Length: 155
View 1 (cartoon, one colour):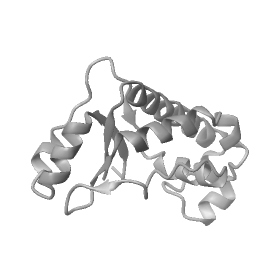
View 2 (cartoon, helix red, strand yellow; view 1 turned 135 degrees about the horizontal axis):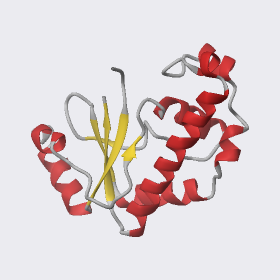
View 3 (cartoon, rainbow, N blue to C red; view 1 turned 60 degrees about the vertical axis):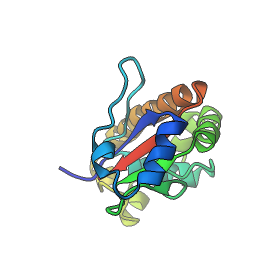
View 4 (cartoon, one colour; view 1 turned 180 degrees about the vertical axis):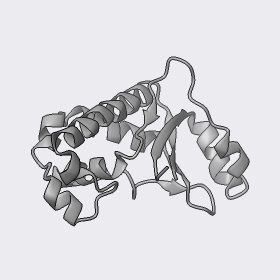
């Protein structure tokens, strides 16, 4: 077990209700589910490696600091539709090769980039990040296309 990060698409109205209800919304937050047919927003433990590469490539995408806390435990964060749209545009403009150019397993382990598998796994770690980057980009493209907001779960 470890710290994972995932996104769930919600309407702007749902996000507004969650913001107003915070911090009492914990039960509602834990029951959010992906709609069948929507791309998964599940990043597993790849979130910190992706965060590192997105920052190194100067994409303007910040997986951890651009959102609104929705609960006292700081496990759930809201991403308004405007932020979802901007993120989708930036991800669309950033092919994974632009991120891969910054993949440095030794530097990532030295910087304590979770889950500290980078030197051990080498090229397999890069493949792991590539897979989850595709997941991230697909999620945001789909959410932006429908004008949706998102809830990020970190825990």
